[in-house]
Every structure is written in C-alpha cells, then in structure tokens.
Image (cartoon, rainbow, N blue to C red; front, side, top):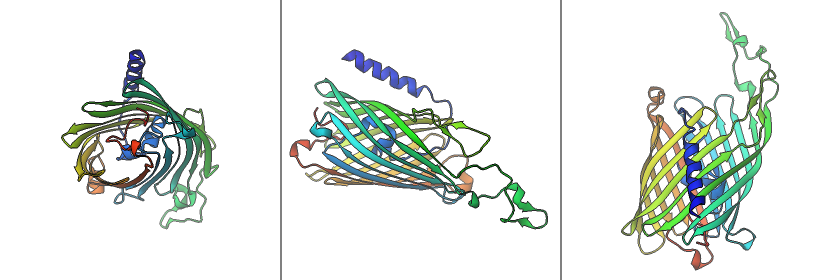
Length: 333
C-alpha cells in the first residue's frame, strides 16, 4: 500500500513542476468550497449524504466589463447505496469582456475510493459532459468600422472573417486524491486533469486552436488547535499558458457545543491578488465570503479592486454516524 501512496505523491509533484508562468485565468478563490472545479476525485468527499453548493464571483468592475463566474453542484457520498462510490452533477458559467464571451459547462461524474490504511483512502474520479462557448460580435468594434473625421460607424462591415458565434464541445476530466485522518487532524491532497479530449475551439475560419488540457493540484488540511483548527490551503492550476498559484491559511473557531464554526483567513494568489476570507457554518449550512485586493500590474487601473466571491453550501446528514469533525475523508473510513 505504501508503494501506491508514493506513486501518487510523485505524480502530484510532477504536475506541480509544469508551472512556467503566472497569469489571469478562470478561477475561484474559495476553491475548497468548489471542489468539482478542482478535481473530479473529490466528488462525494464531504461529511454527510447529500451536498448542494453554489458560488458567485465578479471581478475587474473598475477596469472593463466585469468578469462574472457562477458554479453550482449536487453531490452524493453514497452512489448506488455504496459509500465507496460518490456521484455528482456540476454547472459552471463564466462571462467576460465586451464581447460577452461565455463559457457554459454541464458535467456529471463519479468517484471511487480505495481504503489503503485504517484511516487513509485514495480516490479516483471521472467527470464528463459538454462545454459551450459563445460570444456576441455585435458588441465588438473593428478598425474597418472607423472613418476619418467621423469616427465609429456600426453600420460598416467589420472586414473580419468570423465564421460562428458559438461552439459546443464534449469534455472529459479525471483526477486522483488521497485522504487521511490523523491524531493531529486530517488532510486531503490531489491532482485534477481536465479537457482530456482532443477538441478544437475556433471562431476564426482560418485558424483552429486545440483546447488545451487544464491541470490542477490542491491541498488542504485541518490541524487541531485545542477545540479549534488551523486550515492551510494550496491550489495550483495551469491552463494553456495561464497559471495561478494560491497559498493561504484559515483559522476555524468552533462556536458552542454544536456543529457551528467561524472561519477567518487570507489567501495570496501569486503576482495577482491577496484575498481576505470569512466563513460561517451553522449546523449543515456554510456561507463563505472573500474579497480580492488586486496586486498585479493592473493595480493602478483597478484602484486595488479585485474580486468579490460568495459561496453557500448545504449538507444533508440523515444518520448520526455521518457526523464527524472533518469534511475531507470518505464516510467509510
């Protein structure tokens, strides 16, 4: 079993080494509340039977047309009445820029967990569905539509060879993760591989652009600090030449004798932004808020404003045996 664990860790390190640059990309600061975007192996990995979650993010409000992202997911930790199988369906939407370029994604998936130690498991997940891409050319302005001494004339032809306004492509993703519970707390770590199919995304008739694979690495842990927890967070993603690296920490304050808590934290997105986080958990409902302070080259234009992100989740736990003090490991551990 140790050999399996070592192979997994080496594989994760290789993915991390793929980083070569840093740039803006589709992302969520609160990635630990949006795991189906990070890794299909995390489907069903929560403390309960059924989970519903949603996220909303808006950014660059002071620079241009705001970039807006939405996500929603429904998961179960006991697919086919077996707690080694997890199942879920996810929806993601992003709208960006003057052209109102939209990405809409709907996927269904499952995960399977293998117990390698008494309180450690490895999970493998798959996610498949469709990605739809669209933009509105009428919202764009081109050189050929400008006339000397007159200016912009929307009635003139753009002079561009624009073949289509929407493209729909199939998607397939996979991932692997490791979960463990220890005397000091718990931990999960994993790698996600997205867009495995060799699909081509094109809006120009003369060019074809392969839709490149997306890689992600994630790590988070809950370390006991008396009745409270210290929660370190790491997320590294790469999509084409665009990369992001998030490193952060949260302090989870247990409130009362019930399953309630408060989160306070900070996350740094390398060469991009620093985010302040706040979360509150009341019974089976969690609400998260984060605000990104821009620290990139757009700092002057954005007046340090970055992004506002909201997340909400609800976990249905009909059986008391599901109640545990961690959220990262499969139920059967």
